[in-house]
Amino acid sequence: MTNLVSLQSYIKKNHTTGLVWGKQPFTGAPSAASAPGGPPPPPPPPTYDLDDFDSLNMGSDERAALFDELNQGEGVTKGLKKVTADMQTHKNPNLRSTGVVSSTATKSASGAPGPKVPVVKPAKFSLEGKKWVVEYQMGRKDLKIEEVELNQVVYMFGCKDSTIQIKGKLNSIVIDSCIKTAIVFDSLLASVEFVNCRDCQMQVMGTVPTITIDKVDGLQMFLNKESLKTEIVSAKSSALNVMVPNADGEYSEWPIPEQFKTTIGPKGLTTSATESV
Image 1 (cartoon, helix red, strand yellow):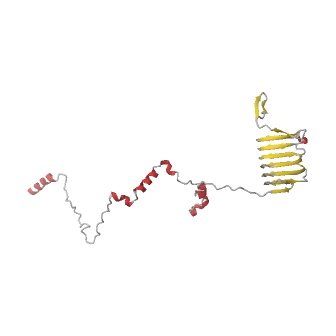
Image 2: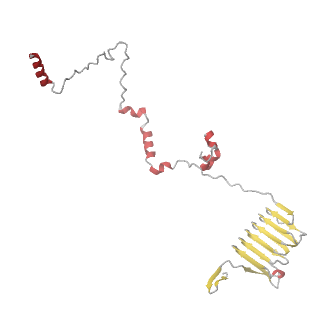
Image 3: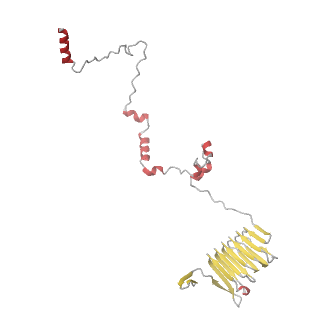
């Protein structure tokens, strides 16, 4: 009984929070290190000196250059190539199977256009039904159409530095997209029309009821005494001159107005041509 009282006093004095085990806990079995045949403990991880970090990664110059590129801000993307539509896989499913962008797509992405090759088309001079077709004549000064009929027409397209002469009376003539081209004809039943031409000439030896001009820059029209009653209709054109014969055989040059003045009156608009200076 005395021993129990002494033990109780000892516990209250030295173990106020309960029993405290020793530094080596009792597990009831020998430790892994003392067990026979157990694997040895793993070695500690290697340690590196901070001075050797550059030799393990990259030199100081390379690292500084990398940081300089990253610090460019928005300018860091200037060197990147633009991805065009022909390089995108969702618009070109055939690229998904190969994984290779075609050479044409690479050339277009560089942004450097190749030299423009002029299109050369064969010249044409033939009668197709009731239409004389004269196309892509270059530097021809000896073009002639003879023995025409009243129901025939002449269509010239894409000619340059050429001259054509038409003998006889026919229905109409159309000059389309020609440059420095001259045409001489006898008489027409309907009209002669110039469209999208530049620096052309026309001479009528007989009569022509109407001359139609649309989108023309530079046209000289030589009339004779029989064609003074012709009507000239022009739109979106400039540098148009009418050569009218005089009694002495010479020509007087009259420009067609390019500027107009419009005023508002009680009955609407009134438009008149302004005088050329």
